[in-house]
Length: 481
Image: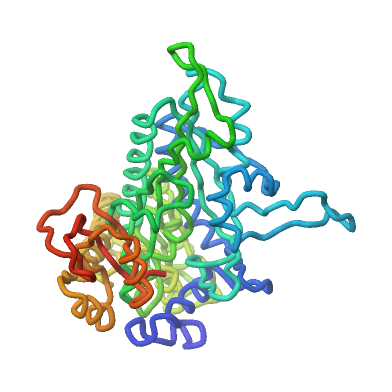
């Protein structure tokens, strides 16, 4: 594969350019003519479909249903929840005309769907018998990110899911928040092999309008944190302005408790950054749209049919067991060119079948994660594919987990805190007094924010890393995307 087609920079030397080349040359996405927007190409979309399938299955198993709500939201709806509206105003795209006619009310192109959904919920919820109401939406949202865009990380339009649920009590809403947080952990860690820190956001960093926000935070190779997903208890902050009320078991009227939660295609960006190498992508098998690629190798015309037939037989055998398999039978490319292309695209396992393999009743297997090559007899193909793919999945997570653990530093003094940020980045575990003014000062002076407050309080409290006052929490700071 020529330099023009392959990756031309080293990941360790120019991380930003490496990332851009992987996204575009592996044909995940492309830049749109519209600034701030990107095109999700078929291969990138197929990864998103795998991610969606993993989460959608868990949601449906717990009685959540998918629905769809309008893209356009009346400005009056946003104003009903003033705090929420104020938070999103700078990012909102507005529709002001229908054809040549000016609208009497501006319409927001959804930055998130709470308001349009809760207007409907106010009509649907009447009694405690209607609860819980568990709805999820797969859609896109638009937020003005025109000046600093990066594919899958920060764009003006992005794909995600947003769940919105209604409950009788705070306790029910709390259980929903934590259940979804665990679903996200399974999706991000177990399927995508991206290790995360789980915890709460600070009051300053929580979702606008939420009672509290839980988060999953990952660490990227350049020392910056990436928020992977959030799950919020919205309390009654939306049910009151939108009149989501129900007749309770006690025959009196109550305001409901609501939650919202979401993950986006940022999962793809984390997968690229954490697992990719100088050859391109490495996709964890559980979210890989193609888990196994089979490359027939012909050296003379006479054996091409037999090798092609054997490749098809192996593919059919693996497909029947549930693996996603592609046979690359293109005649216009050499085997070496194909090897490089599939390595660039990150397919976890490559099977090669050539004349010698055919004679010896075997296939050659090559792992994408470590390039290890093994010869496997025909009767062991299924067992070895199963074993190797699971080993790749475990290996990618273990490697990423080790990197995240090594990125965590402890800081007791503010000078030490700033030195760590500048020299190595990563997560900084530090004590904090709980004062928002102190948190704001740290952000203004260093660019670091509180990424997460552990779900279970961590001990050894001393003094606040910045102001020296008595600490109330151990938190994790980092600079972030």
